[in-house]
Amino acid sequence: MKRYTLPQTSFLLLLGLVTLAFIWIMTPFAGAVFWGIVFAIVFAPLHYRLLEVTGNKPTASSLIALLLILLMVILPVTLITLSLIDQASGVYAMIESGQINFSTMFQRVMHGMPGWATSLLERFELTNLATLQTKLTAAASQISQSVAKYAINFGRNTLDFLVSVTVMLYLLFFLFRDGQTLSSRIRDAVPLAERYKEPLFDNFITVIRATVKGNILVAMAQGTLGGLAFWFLDVPGPLLWGVVMAFLSLLPAVGAAIVWGPVAIYFLITGATWDGIGLIVYGVIVIGLVDNLLRPVLVGKDTKLPDYIVLLSTIGGMALFGLNGFVIGPVIAALFISTWGLFAEAREFHEQ
Image (cartoon, rainbow, N blue to C red; front, side, top):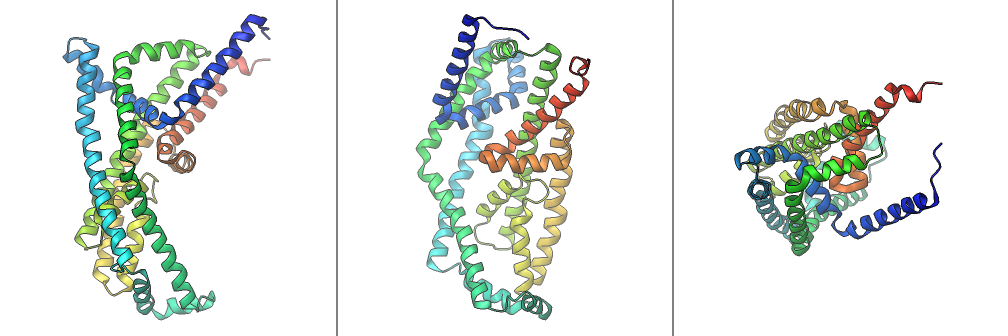
């Protein structure tokens, strides 16, 4: 085993301390830095194409790429966010004023329930409907108000959002312009053999591109389809619930159904039978088909991860890292599988 001299050991210690200090001072902008790196990786093919168009001028191609990202991504997201804040404020006001009354909705559900369902409640000793109504009404009200308040608070923190977006775009410009040099230096600095670096770096880039493009396209499609269905059925706040479905659709297989499923059941129980049946058919065939067809093609195929690994790593990543986790989780899972695959194939670890 190699022994380091005192100067070498001291330098490695200094290297570790300086790295930790750098990570510490960058923590307030962790989200901006993370998404700057993600966008740089996802839109790298666009930047390379612009380099050819501009005659290999990195600064010009980086500025054009940045402008295109502003027009294609940042501006639409900002407009949707502003509309979402306005609609969330309206829904919250309707809850406060009593226009949306969960107690009344619960009573309609209880009166519309068939006899077998009432018997089932009695079997599980849920006959105290007043207590059950209070608990379910409070839970539904709390969830709705939390969603609305989160959107409203997001609107109040506009300055922080603008600062983060500015930092991200500023970093993104330099990642486009100097990305190849930076990635080469990082690759050279990683103390691994080249036969390990190449598959790990390639896998890292592939998973990020597939996860971001695939999940965002699926989320946009399911959120749009769900919002249109709620608008057609005259459900209050269709944009709000469409965005909620888009976020929840980041969870494979189960996401958007968490929203449209209870609404369909409510329609069925309260007598709006055709609305309920129509929403179920639409949700399963149209919204569900988007997830079942697009996600395996856009995410699973490129990442070479089984569907259950994608699901578990996405849920685990979002539980630990919030929204960023839908990228971080699958990346860690892919690197885990790739690293263990390299270890299993490496002879030097198995030879006596």
